[in-house]
Length: 341
Image (tube, rainbow, N blue to C red; front, top):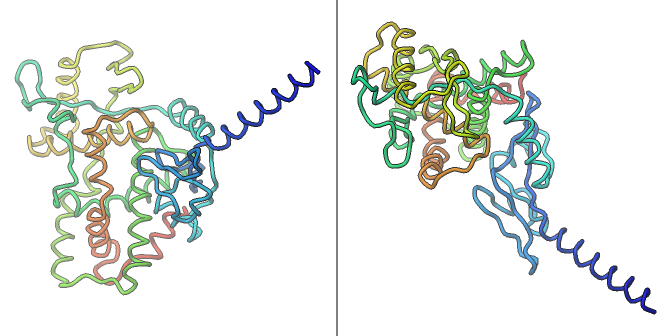
């Protein structure tokens, strides 16, 4: 009798635990990419005890899956799934965290440059390395001048990264990996905008495309990307700054990177140097997000601006003008780039 009672209690407890685990499983839609990597929302959806589906962060429920499935989705990935741009499946939180740990954090090398501002002897640039809890300077999405070359630049970078993958099987470092991820996401959203929202998309007047072409020719792909060649490293996991495996202080590093940039660019103007460092600081933040390190409120808000519909609309205009040569939305070219054809 006593043993039977224990057995019943054990069965009830096991059933309760199993039911709780089933309810508490956090899930998301994850899509494989042509280069063998995976993309997914940063957060998860889960069923609460009253069977309602709760989502956090950039997750939305009911987009491409029913609320009863309670799967975290992201609109661009649902679009990729529905339009044969990627193979997608549902992953649990544990599976995704293992992927990020072993396929992102441990499998790539990060070469990037920290801020070159506020040099210790006052030479060169002189301003704060941080402003309003963000690395400074940093390329902001609120400035239209930053957004006009953004879309064409991303298409060019996807083309370059695809070629690297075809030749070497993978990209070189975390900067390129996160950059590739960022640009694919923007490009999927632009493609959806062209195909679903504006099937007869065109830009008028034509003179606007001429103006955008002139802007892109000066500020786009033709400027060399210094962050791939500078030998300084940043480890987000332990916040240590190192050069040649020797830990040094922020000011010494800032002065060193300023000289490195100045030498590589043959006495670049202060304005161009400012813009270069701004882009590198944005790249560092994208890497931090790609590695799913904890973001501050200021960092989350800043990156959220880069995900706005305005960013997509302006990218669509510029891509039409540059890659579409002011004649048509280059839908076939975009699909080809996204599928690594």
